[in-house]
Length: 307
Ligand code: CP
Ligand code: NVA
Image 1 (cartoon, rainbow, N blue to C red):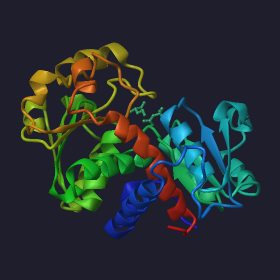
Image 2: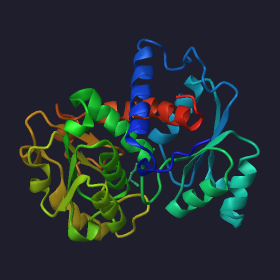
Image 3: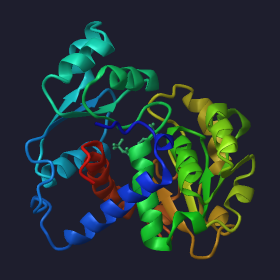
Image 4: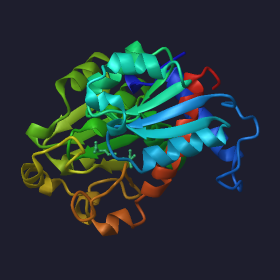
């Protein structure tokens, strides 16, 4: 049994196997209707619960369809409907749930909840986003980058804006898989020191800078995310701090001519990114969203030793 909690927990070989598995399963389904199963039914007989303490469109739909296509059973529950909200401990909940299902994907408000749940569970647990990281998203992002541009270790990625949970998983992806990452963030919204210290220790090519123009200089791929994440409260302050970090035509001019634009979505159009970039030739945001499905399949198969 193996959890999928953060990208830093895996070796390069393990993440490469997930990326390759996602890519080959994606190719094998070309022209199949979305409701059709993968013929080898690798999750037949497995039941997996998706538990959400926060809203979701992509993570929910992609995991539900991934599990169905792999031949497994799936159901979704909101954390608020569970006794968790009435004070049952996280560890007791994990022990109970482990008696009913074969695996859990958890979108938790607090990273600590996810770690505590995983350490008490006797079944695989997948991190479907916390306040600190979003590893399933970034595995799909790397898959998308590699489909369009080739191996990540040859790529210059720029992150612009809030040094948030998705940014943290990008730091871990580059730390394990290679490539370079330039992060342009206001001082107070830089990624947490624990992620940067880890990157330094891994000798990863990750740098944080104040200027968004410097960060995107000659980048092969420019990535951004919402100015206000689901766990954030200081909305007005963030809008003020981040307004000069909008990804627009002027900023994209500093990147390589054929640079990609990525965003995990949901996007707040004309805040962190303009319509013309979202809908323009640089944008691969909907390929990125589709790849959540293909990446989830490889993540699930890795958890069950079937990759
Ligand atoms: N990108 C992402 O995780 O989207 P959802 O919040 O809709 O799942
Ligand atoms: N950073 C965003 C990602 C949403 C998928 C959030 O945590 O709300």
